[in-house]
Image (cartoon, rainbow, N blue to C red; front, side):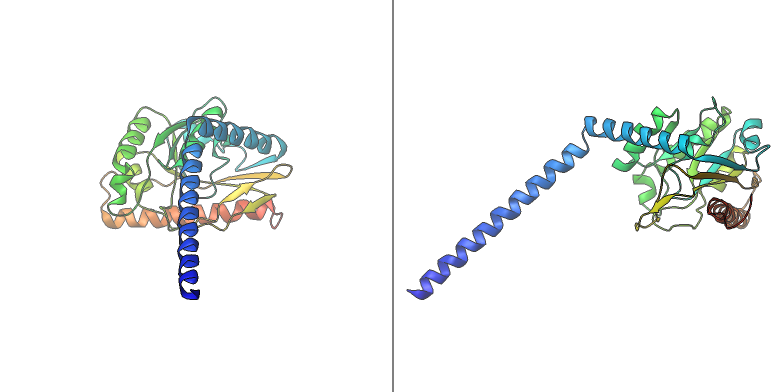
Amino acid sequence: MSNVSEARDDRNATAVTIATAHKERRLSALLRRLSESEAALALGGFIGATYFRLVRCTNRTVRIPDADFHAPWEKEPAILVVWHGEHFLVPFVGPPRRAINALTTLHRDGEILTRGGMHLGVKFVRGSGDHGKEFMRKRGVQAFTAMLRLLRRGEPVVLTADVPKIARVAGLGPVTLAKHSGCPVVPIAIATSRRVRLSNWDRTCVNLPFGRMVMVRGEPIRVARDADDEALETARRTVEARLTEANARAYAIADRRCSA
């Protein structure tokens, strides 16, 4: 009798475990659907835009160089590049009344960024760079073509220089775009004195209000229209070096480790 009772208990415990697992999967699927709903995306974008307006308004802004910070993309269309994880304040790069076109991923996070950025006057191209077959799945070709068309129309674009998930290593996308458009690549870094750094792959920086905001522009990089693979690689390394330098300088000034 003892063995029969134990067997029944085991079966009951297994049934309870399976039922619990099914409930957890259904709950997870429900939460995922809710998070991807139109209402959730719209609310997330609005909250994000409102928060970063607060960050912008409560941080004292320093631009380096101050006199002609915007010059490279006021005189002609340009390709602005930032690092992944350093992008939340891009809508405030300016100049005022000059729309910037930003490249954002097709992922849900990119959709929320797009919704938020639209509240801040940014226009968007959807897609992203990647390696191998992922480049096609993420609509890399369509995004490249759209950015090229915008540049030829005289509008600046902004994109991340590094490709997921290899942080702080510039890809060939920006310099290839520069080659085909004839427009310069301009490194941009934005840092705030108060911030939280996440532990994800790109060490995303969440900027906080009530501090200093430092924007550093690196020197533009041009790529010849007849650049071969070796010349593109040289330009890629230059973009990486200048963006790394601009980023380090922005944080050093924001943290008062060096003067402007």
